[in-house]
Length: 130
Image (cartoon, rainbow, N blue to C red; front, side, top):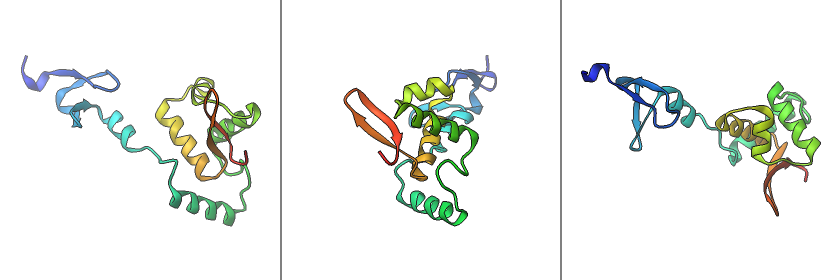
């Protein structure tokens, strides 16, 4: 088999791709979807993002869950209804990939709606006011 027809698994998602379609990064070969996913993460602890989001929400007159996407609103309401929830519990409830879930948490954090809280049995995502 020649190299131009070689197939290899993505080191992250394990789907098969032609070798020339994989991207080498940090000693691993990953597909384009995994590359984009890894580089499209939103940082939760970003003071400029928090400031920008706060100013935008204030100017738009948005309070609480107003202005959130449906998924963000449902995650926020779930966290409120449970008095806080662990990441694993939220991921199971909404069946979201971990990367997407982390992005949603980051956006909710930028809106100052949720934050992390260390409890005796682990880290919980809780309402910002707590």
